[in-house]
Image (cartoon, rainbow, N blue to C red; front, top):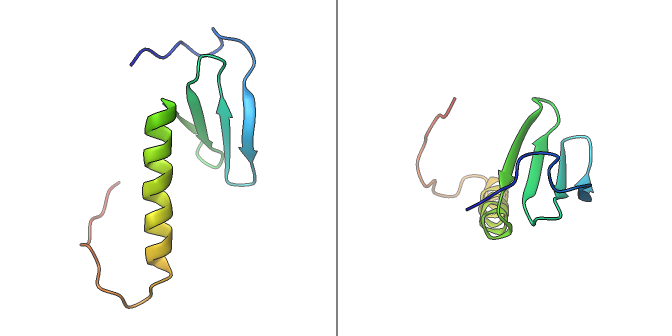
Length: 77
């Protein structure tokens, strides 16, 4: 996957911005997801972004299940 270097494609289109994160799309199609508290930005293709967003939505929905069976416990630092 060929993603241009930051700033090489022109101004980004902001898709979402709140107190937690900012999501923008570069004119070349690369999605930029910035976690504002840490300042970490992840650059993804549109397809990869959709897959990550879907996975995060699934995980968030599982948080609401309370005592439902868990997929497993993993700590990632």
